[in-house]
Amino acid sequence: MFWKKKPDPTKPAEDQPESGARPERTDAASPAAESDAGAAAAATPAPENAPRPAPSATTPAEPVAASEPTAPAADSAAESPPPKKEGFFRRLRKRLNQGDSWLTYDLAHLLPGGKPDEAFLEEMESRLLTSDVGVEATSKIMDSLDKKLWRDELRDVKAVFKTMQEGMLEILEPCEAPLVIPDSPRPYMILMVGVNGAGKTTTIGKLARRFKADGHKVMLAAGDTFRAAAVEQLQTWGARNDVPVVAQHTGADPAAVMYDALEAARARGIDVLIGDTAGRLHTQDNLMDELKKVKRVLTKIDPAAPHETLLVLDASLGQNALVQALRFHESIGLTGLAMTKLDGSAKGGILLAVAERLGVPIRYLGIGEAAEDLDEFRAAPFVDALLHGDEGGNRRRA
Image 1 (cartoon, rainbow, N blue to C red):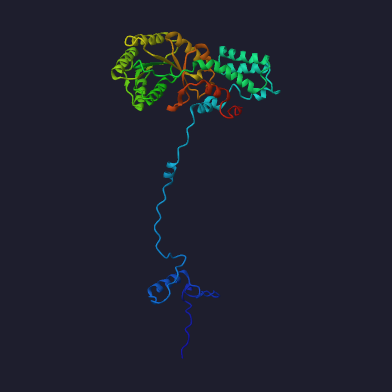
Image 2 (cartoon, helix red, strand yellow):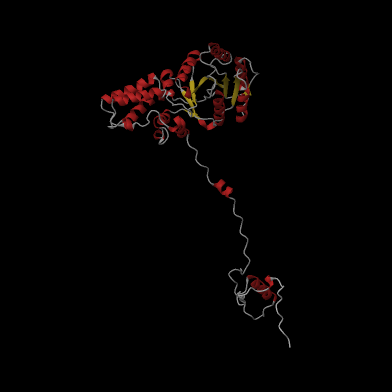
């Protein structure tokens, strides 16, 4: 007779089933059991005449070809067209006065009745003067507004805008004259002048890039032999634009540098020669005489040289820029202007003041440090930026 062996109380608890625990079902196989069963079935050969089981949803009947790797996101992004760059004058509207118009800000609140009156015109005159438009140009614009007011032709803000626009264009359009490099003479000599910090050297680098892109052979002359590192700065621009630079040591005679550069340009078949000069205040008579000497020396090689004397003006200086332009023009005779730094605190009206007083062609406008931030002056889009600023810009000012 055999007796059933009692469980050993000393055996570990995990080897004994918990009391009351539900036994595992044998009809529902665990994943491990299914795997073992599947392996056993695969090991046992099926009868030849047995029907072939249909493939399960999880087991493909035939091998699936490997899918091609997905192209990286960077490649798809590279294939998409680059964003369209904003035009120069569109960027000018954003940057001039940080997008605000000092002239036309909040005009609607100045017209509670909706129709301009004498008090309104007095406010506009004050705004023109504080926007660096100058006395002469302001008087010319205000005369048109006064006449239309007395003829009862200023019925709303739109009429005021239109009258101011017409007056500004009348002043600026005669000065809209882009610099065109003629077929002769060769080389065409451009002498860059201006005070310290106006942006002469930077403007030279941008012009060199521009002329070279137009197909011209360009050379630079490092005539600023006074300022420390001025020669090196111009040589950096030359290397960046792949154009030669004629230079001498610091302290050399600027006239001698220009003379050598003009001779070298003629010998090498250069189309455009741009000469840098040291910055000088318009009140420094001895330095202004130095510019006269440079021009005299150049005429020994070419009686018409320099063919363009371009003054670079810092627009943020306001009426001081007008004084500089007048003195430079009196001393050496200017043939063109480049107005820089219109992206800073400049209000922009100084162009009207200079145009009214000098009548010298305005060649270029500068609104930043990038190469594309220099472009030819055009009166209509500039006046539009001056009057309207950026979209909604004249509503942001506190």
